[in-house]
Length: 458
Image 1 (cartoon, rainbow, N blue to C red):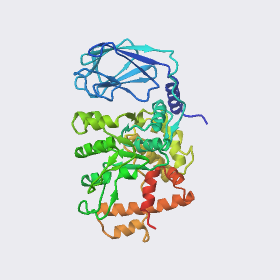
Image 2: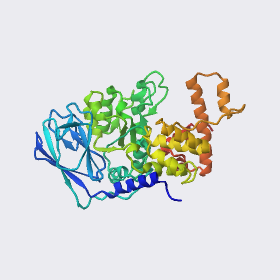
Image 3: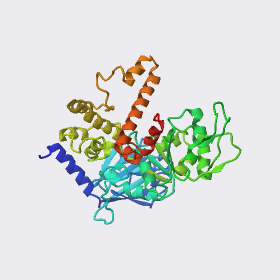
Image 4: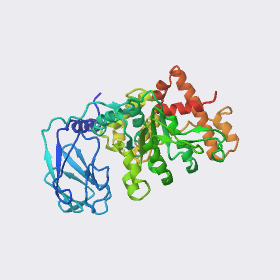
């Protein structure tokens, strides 16, 4: 059966994008404090090339009129895209102020007192983007993803700290765990600490641990996440939300490779590889005084920016089929006409939202098809599938919770815990008790699966 024209066009655009990897652009600074410096940006680079005063910028300008993170260059097809990143003084191409523009060569870009000439190059060798379609559990065949994989492989073998940046739902934790699984620390623990999931008054105790009696409620000794991750990898998720008062203590722990529990009289050594993840722009957070500059420098030795799903040409259909199989369906269960509409959706919730859409479709059948298409066409985020009507029976745990007349947050938590307990039991039984296989089949990180398993009542 031939594919619909829209699907064929989407695939053709993706293949065309993937094929063009022998084009690069030379960026030469012709005016300003950095005059004479030259940079090259090509399609094989793992992320856009940042321009500005900040240390994360590949084109770092000693120009006081440039913002810390002023603009970005990225090769797309045979053109160079330049994007102003909300700079203070603006970005200009051939004298015109721009927010986003396409360059083909021979343009003059001005940032503050700095002028840069753009020259196109072609026929270059050695810039081929790898053909790999995944890295660990991270799946994607778009150019935006494939050019990340070599960097991920290098970082996996290194011991340096890494920052993973990206919008909510792009798969930052999955990438961090994949880096851990392919590193020399793969046999050690992978521990996740979410800065947004712990009350501010308990953050320090969770990070560094505490002794019995260190504070009210500390009835026993507890290891912090640094100790728990000893010999392995610690992911500090949403580090941009970490309380400013705690940041110097975290910096000291990283620099000294030692921690001291609350209430303890001495520090202890820890051997931990650190990965941080954030949905925030840390350059802006530093400029605003909400994140320490020295901690940022210590963490940003390696840096990966995960692209949002809307920038991953061709990956929507690939991921939808991947999730179909992962959730117990068949690879081609979602029709092409639905995939075409999904391909054009903005996916504000990124990969997580797409997985919800697939789950809803598989759960509700033809009704799910209509509902999923309607939600996507309306531009609304697709929530997880809801339970069917009439599912409440006398012996049902939801009905039992409702009968207790609990406050909504408490009732909701009881229902979620019961669902998780039943789900973990079922998927473990299906995979003979193998946690790694059960986690893969569930579509969640092994670390999170183990947390849920630990919560399960005997």
